[in-house]
Length: 254
Ligand SMILES: [Zn+2]
Ligand SMILES: [Zn+2]
Image (cartoon, rainbow, N blue to C red):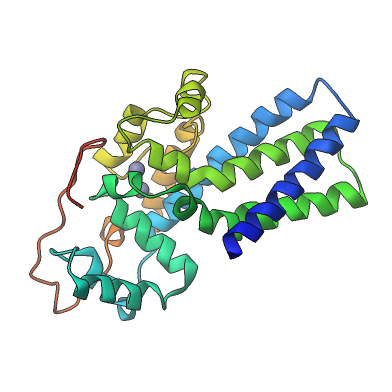
């Protein structure tokens, strides 16, 4: 219900921006769209880096979910609802990013609504409404509005695009965008799943070279530490092995 209303408001909001562009057509629209795609690709990598390496507070007991061996039992589902339902969106999303590394295929099985809910409510919609206000109060040049439109669309679909990297067959439009270089390939994303010290961008991958340099600087400054890729262990999980890395696009039972 909330999702449907928010999606309808976002559609109207984007339509307002597109009308503003149509009323002021300019050759700068295409470069603006591409610039926006660069910006949102960079943001996807920066946010991904933060969520991978932010230390999880031990009191949240995320280790009980992360290291759980049986993830199909009613007890696990109850615990998952109890823990993830109480930590708020930021920690829920951070947990999902960490959980994704050893179990990449679980993401590929989620539906569009699950993949876009958080990015709709907390990124695309507020950002698009902000652009509507800016355009109404003091219209910027067409290339700025165009860049804004592609950042809104990229922000909305970040996790959807990421999920298609973990499916055997991408939708036709995703395959077409990959051929144009607008979306990255599963092979390029696999570098991040092999070792979580590179290739953080999850849209086009264009900005991975500067993001890799930023990551190395953060490691050197002691801000990104490998142990924070997993939730801290409690007594209940101290003896359990680190969960094993799986290959991309493999069918698993997770
Ligand atoms: Zn990651
Ligand atoms: Zn992935």
